[in-house]
Amino acid sequence: MSSLPPPSPDQAFCHVSALESGFIDLPLHLVLSTADPSLNQKIIAPSLSFLIRHSKHTDKNFLFDLGIRKDWESYPPSVVQRINTIYKDSIWIPNDVCDSLAKGGLSPTDIDTVCVSHLYWDHVSTAAPFTNSTFILGADSKDLLESQSQSTNSGKTNAFAHDIPLSRIRFLPSPKDESQLYIPIGPFLGFDYFNDGSLYIVDAPGRARGHINVLVRTSPDGGWIYLAGDSAHHWGLVTGDSDIACHDGFGCVHEDKEKAKEHIGKIRELMEVPRVKVLLAHDERWYNEHKGSEAFWPGVIQSA
Image (tube, rainbow, N blue to C red):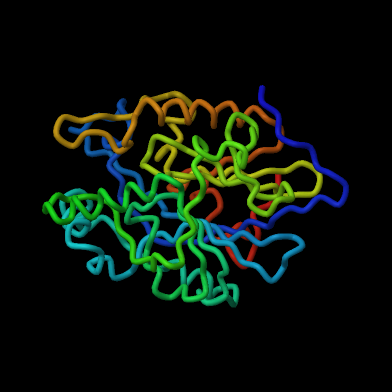
């Protein structure tokens, strides 16, 4: 079993609050190999964002993912076409991330840092309101942005969308090229963002180029939350009850299925560590257990 670094004296940690940022009627056969397409099984999958506040830098607000934008028809035409093809009449956004922040008295201009797990449409919303934010993207997102431009020019539909000003993007160094900046953290390689052991940005390959997760220390005495993004779209993949689905024509929701399976295995290993909570970006199970609770901003997810 992998271990996580023990707390140091006067250990810094972070408060994590969930934010509603849209919902998707998710057909299970798209993500689970065990789901029968003829049964048309669906779950109402939330698109969750997370507000992270440092215990010592109390004036800093760190946001992980932005969810879905209310005016989703304003995504690039190729993305709108994809949404209409797969999710027509199956997404709704009663509260976007800005609405959810406002419930606790914050506006987008109060957010210093937006860390985007990956550039799929249901995680990037719109950058327009976040005028004071620096945006953190995984290293391989650079290549993804280039391929997005090529796909758009060719008329090919894709799931990528962003309107982040390039001048405000901070691309993380690659674990391959800058390994001295990454350290083993449990079963992963992580970048110590605040340089105090309170938050690690984790390389999370498989879902899409540049996909990243966040491991957050949530107490001064050993509690953690792992924000897994789209490493898995359903808990059946984490538990091993199902394999990742692949389809003729549609393909696989993961860009690299084998790397995704390997990373899911590491998440499974992390779950053996005491006092670790794992949350998925579309965590239907967790949402149904906690909706309307103090886990949502302005409340805080209780540490394990």
